[in-house]
Amino acid sequence: MDGASERGIVQMAVENLVLHFGGVAALAGVSLEVYQGEILAIIGPNGAGKTSLLNCVSGLYRPTEGRITFEGEEITRLSPHQIARLGIARTFQNIELFRGMTVLQNLMLGRHIHMRTGLLSGGLFWGRAQREEVEHRRIVEEIIDFLEIEPIRKKVVGSLPYGLQKRVELGRALALEPKILLLDEPMAGMNVEEKEDIARFILDINEERGVTIVLIEHDMGVVMDISDRVVVLDFGRLIAEGSPEEVRNNPLVIQAYLGQGSGAYTL
Image (cartoon, rainbow, N blue to C red; front, side, top):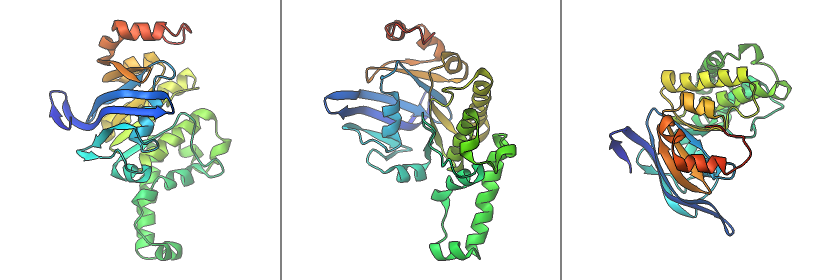
């Protein structure tokens, strides 16, 4: 599944992924490809296995069966740290920031995998350590400008509104300099204006920075507006994939959503 296809370069491939929690199959043979430079949305009803899939890709879960390759290298059994170093970063449904630290400090922590100086030189802050600190700070300041969070750069994260905390978490993921960015419900709990801001930033990250985006999102309006391609999971299985319009009109997808009976989703 690695290499080129008519859709472009396959940057990441998931092959027959199975994940069991006791007798429950969170993923039941999921296979999909992620193409370099695309925005791929993963949708599906609650409990479909979407977050479990991202957890396998980012190394938080070890799949029961199957394999994951990234740029031709198998990453199925690598640790989260190793996967992040290769160029895969993510955000979470529940914000995972250091709430007692400032925005700037949280973003600087996102640079940790790129730091090369040893403990001694880093502690003394001289020579190479000083030059490295200046370079990391420059990159972080550029991210702060990019995400338009300059006014809150010295604010303690725990004091910020929810929407801004989500933006800071996006910034920390960008500080890892990812090739693929995994976004797990980045707009959950936001108002319309905040969603519009995040959607704009996602498009800019993709277009201006050339970062491939894999996005889990329940807001179907956003999914249909910004995605190049959509895959649909239901009960741990991939039931459809294609363009937003193809997926919108797929009978299996309509059935999966209408079967929820909650009216929470509109295709």
